[in-house]
Length: 451
Image (cartoon, rainbow, N blue to C red; front, side):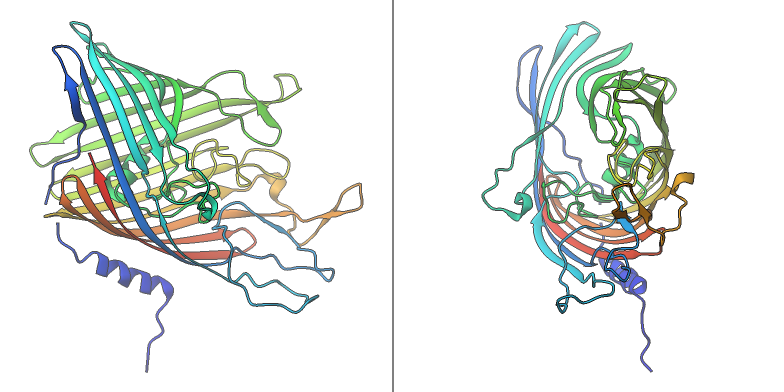
């Protein structure tokens, strides 16, 4: 008798085939010097990559309708939004509309896009150096699948950095501190040379893939600010940053003060075998209502933690986050998942684990993560009951995303220290509070050139 395998088992088996590759520690890509004199050095770094990205997924969930054909609730937040193939329906047909299937094969960018960085480094005093750095990012796919649309570069970083015995000061646009450790784990041990979850499927606008961001990882992103980093003492380093404020959505559209972010790290070598790193970070942003006194306010706040271990050929990292008004993908994200029906911020948490093994010239990785959304008391309304507003029209209550869970695996073959081939798989599972679900399978493969 033939055994029926579940989709999860098929995915695990497929991952196991990817993990049959073997791999050797290799030299990491570094900046390339363009020129220098006795004091000043001009350098560049960057990468170019493109990936085949195949998606097979359930269509976005459709809510059941009443006798008049109106939906009983409104599905909000999370999930994979894309045009789906659906069976034709007779005109005027009643009942729940079919959601169909998403199937797409695209050529696109990875978790890290095409980048081009330029920097200049030189002395200020005998004990202090200065660096100016600008980094451009760009994606390779057509925006909105329109060939004639211009792809503009994104000035992702641009800063001045002073460094000395007293520590460092960065002024300009660079990495955010909140959830930086978790994002580093994904980049170093997961999708630094891959794609993972593709993000905006229709690429309208275009953009970079998410790796595990949104599935246990809250992306640190890039932000404009002033960051002070202490010197490293006994393995400890503290970074404190004041970043340009972020306005939220709904009623919370006024800010007064910069956003505070911080991260403390502890790093120690393990003889000649490797090292371990532990970290904790946080963010705080006060928000106000436009046109109202300051006494009407709310706060977006988050806390992140985790660590990573490198021991011989084994790499492992784990991280988590918890906070108020954080969003699914990056801190202070504007989305339907972040606000309740009364405009109040919701709570979020996430958990992520990522492993990688290095054997000869291949990196083999596997990861798991989940991001959860918690309802507010004002969200606790019967989903099947519709409300009538004063105009006499009805509005459906929201069905909020409950969690996004992702499983990934992949292998990267390092042909040279500067030339890499990636194959990676991702399974995304979305679930809403009303019980709606969506599952997506993603397979990616591409080539990356770094310098």
